Image (tube, rainbow, N blue to C red; front, side, top):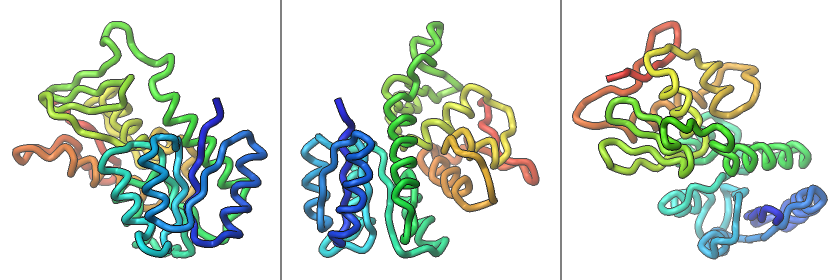
Length: 231
């Protein structure tokens, strides 16, 4: 069965270009010209990945993303003419998996779609340890590999696909220090070319989700990187 991609953008030409390139690669494509229609499409349960323009009438892309993250963990790519670090950080902080700046190369967008689908829907495939029952336990944290969910003393903590892969890296190697490059390549599964804020933002989000009684689960090792504390 082909993956179904939602392209939400108020510019018909952009929707048409992405549709042509995505369908050429075998994907099914749904379209939305505004935020409200994008939300309706997502709630139908028939969307596997969403590409959201930020500047849409009614609900903008950020608000649509917030709506999605309230109840859905599917991959989301933000599409925008805004290229400032603050805009990118906001999108990632709200739960986006990627941020693509206009003008874009359609084939690059297709490549990113394939990459995120492969990561998200193959998470844990062939990689679940039989002796852990499909989970990794570190102290009071338990990472369920099949459902991509994190639990702290039974409390469910939902993760994006990138956050899941980073927590998997940390929990499989608790106490070990990882550099920004190692974290980026594990989380985004792409070569680390230049220093940016993606890792910093993601670590900040994870710390916020893990925050409990003043405990710091992820420590910053100055000049080196980050590590997950064993206890």
